[in-house]
Amino acid sequence: MIDLLIFDGDCGICTSSSEFVQRNSRELKLQVKPYQILNLQNLHPDLNEERTSKSLYLLTKEGKLYNRSKGVFETMKRMRGIYKPLGFILSNPIVVFITNPVYDWVSKNRTKISIRFGLNACNISKYR
Image (cartoon, rainbow, N blue to C red; front, side):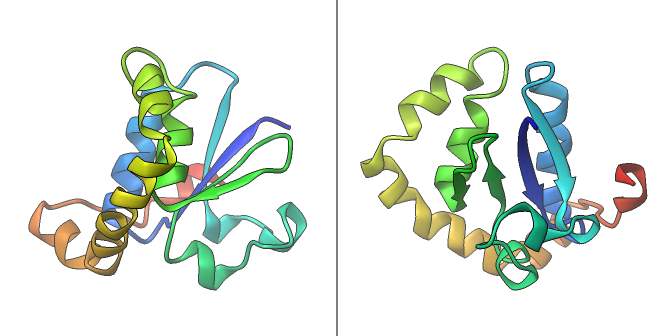
């Protein structure tokens, strides 16, 4: 198993972000899948539809689970270019503490934000 980024395939921001991650991730370091096609209970006991519909999750091959801002920054560590060192810098607990409220606000308003920026979702079929 390799690390798995789990996102909401019905969210435009999430879908666009996951596609960006796929284009910029290091080969064979990360899988990216919408929660809608996964058997969450088989992956990790703390994963369920309610949680994964509100936040992205990064499940590492070692079984660690990261979400919200920490999940974003841990994902960046698995990407190429400037994203990798930025991930290490930003995953600092102080930065995570400061950015989690921003993540939560975006998460609560993601439908409005997606519509405003014309971000499409529901492209789950390409992941099956």
